[in-house]
Structures are given as structure tokens and as C-alpha cells.
Image (spheres, rainbow, N blue to C red):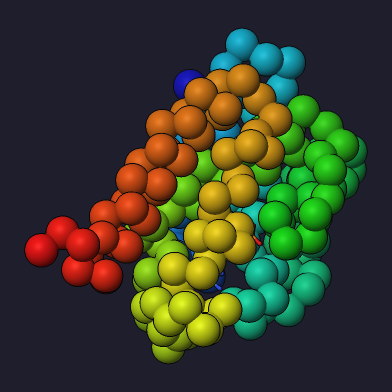
Length: 196
Ligand code: ADP
Ligand code: NI
């Protein structure tokens, strides 16, 4: 199957934009989210082009990465894309972020939320969290500091598995969640010296 020009152009656009990202939102994150999204979409009545574009573009306008609103719409304007599909990509991206608490309005959007959240948990999720904290200069762990990297597990990461929309994502999330819980147990044991 040949890759569609809109996808190739979007790959090029995000590869350039996300180059040099050391906050856990690099091109590898986008490729993993895309792969997860395609896996969750298998056998479903899903617009794969829309889902692929949303996966590649979902972190372009992230405020904490310091990028302005409107970039995605401007990029989509450069593609030969049906207006309904263009609107659908924007809807999905608007609903993806966990912190915005939006319910997905389409199956593609539900899959996209699941895929992004799966990449925030498990071994990769743990690694991304500490990379993000390092990039922001926040504490590794401090029981009195709500912004520490370890606090982010309670704040967000340990809540993600329960919120998966698709059965396939729920299954993957179960194992990734269990791994995080076991990591946090070890972390506490070593932090407090219980293991010595
Ligand atoms: P969303 O777009 O769903 O709101 P984010 O882009 O905020 O998600 O988060 C993506 C990943 O970046 C998180 O899962 C985590 O790995 C990391 N991250 C975000 N905020 C923090 C934080 N305050 N401390 C540590 N890691 C964070
Ligand atoms: Ni993301």
C-alpha cells in the first residue's frame, strides 16, 4: 500500500517541528501513538487517514511545549483534504488531551485518546515522566511537592487505565498499569530503605 501524500507531508511537518524535543513529546512518541491507534482501529469502521493525521498532529499545539494555536489548521490547509475530514482531524485533536477532560465524540477520537494515554503509562510512560520532569527542572520526588515527577503518577498516570474506551486498549492498559504499580512499590522500598 502506498502512503498517501497528505500523510507523507504531515510526517515531514511534524518530524521538523518535534525535532530536538526532550520532553517526551518527540517523533518517536507520535509514531508509537500512530501504531497503537492503527492497532486499536483494526477491524473497526474507522477513517484511517483521519486517525493517522490526528495521531501525527495531536501534540503540535501543546501549550506547555510553547506552540501557538492555529498551527494544525494552517498545516491542514496545505493538504488536499476533504473539508469533513479536515474538521474531523481538528475535533479529534481538540478532544485528545487528558487535562481538558473532553469526551470523545467519534470512534476515531476515542481510539486517539486511548492511544495517547497508553503511551503515557507502562515502562515508556515512566521514562517519559522523568524525561519531562528533567526538562522542566522539577524534583524527582518530594512528599511535600505536588509538582514532583512521582506526584504525577497519582495526579494522572494511575488514573488512565480505568478510562480506556476500547476493549483492546483496556487489555494493554492492564499490564502497563500493573507494571507502574510495581515500579512505584520498588521506588518506595528503595526510597525508604525497606529493601536493605
Ligand atoms: P495530555 O496532552 O494528555 O494533557 P501531557 O502532554 O500533559 O498529556 O502529558 C504527556 C506526558 O508528559 C505525560 O504522560 C507525562 O509522561 C509527561 N508529563 C506531563 N506533565 C507532567 C508533569 N507535571 N510531571 C511529569 N511528567 C509530566
Ligand atoms: Ni501525546
